Image 1 (tube, helix red, strand yellow):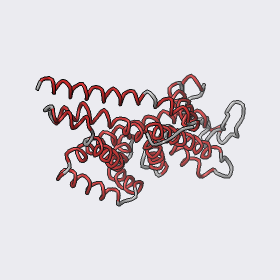
Image 2 (spheres, helix red, strand yellow):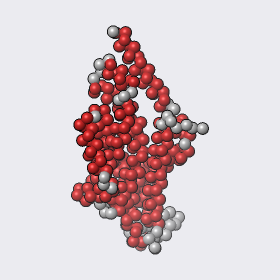
Image 3 (cartoon, helix red, strand yellow):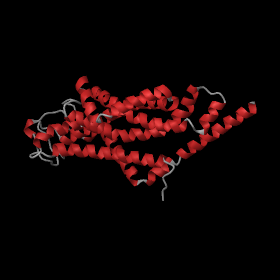
Image 4 (tube, one colour):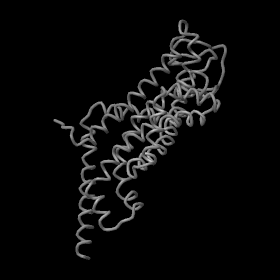
Length: 299
C-alpha cells in the first residue's frame, strides 16, 4: 500500500513538473508575436511615465495660468495648454498615474470576486454553481457601462466609488472564464490521483486547482484592463468618476470638448493616450492567450 501511494505521489510530482516545464515555453512563444512585444513596450512606457511623472515635466499639473490659456502646441508646451493655462502634456502624464491606479484596483477587485466565484462554481458544482451562474446571467443581461453608470450614480463621485461600480459589474467575465477552466482541471489526472491518495478538498484546491487556473487569470487581467480603463474614463467624462482638479484622462477629454474648434489638442491628445494604452493591453492579452494555448502553432 505504501509503495502504491508513493508511486501515485511520484506521478503527481512528474505531472506537475511537466506542467511547469511547459510554462518555460510561454515567454518564447510570446516573443514570437510582434504585436505582443509592441504592446509590452507601450505599457512599459506608460508605466514608467506614471512612475517618473515629477521628473519628466517641469510643470505643476494643477497650476493655473490664465495668461497662457488655450496656447497652441509649442516648444515650451508640446501639447499646448487647456482653458486654465495648465500644460496638457503634464496633465496627461500625471493622468497616467490615475489611470494605472484605477485600472489595477478595478481588475484586482473584480478579479478577486470573479476568481473565487469561478472556483466555487466550477469545482463544487451543484446548487452553488446554479446560484452563481444565474447571478452572472442577470448581471450580464444589462450593458456593462449602463449598469456601472447606475451604480456610480448611487454611490456618488470619487475614485474608489468608480472601482466599486465597475468591479461589481466586471467580475462576471472572470467567473465564466475561470469556471470553464476549473471544469477541465478538476477532471485532470493529477487531481484524480490526489483524490485517490486521500488529499482533502481544501488541499486539492490550494495545491492543484488554483495554481493551474493562474495563467487563465493573468490573461483575463490583461484583457479586462482596457475595459476597466475605458469604463473609468467614461465615468469621469460624465462627471461620475475622478473629480477635478485631479488629472484624469476622461476628465481631460470632458474639459476640452467645449474647445474642439479652437483647441482640439486637449481632447484628442487624451484620446490618443487612452487608445494606445488600450491597444497595449489588448496586444499583451492576445499574446499571452496564444502563448498559453497549446493548439496554436507558430512558424
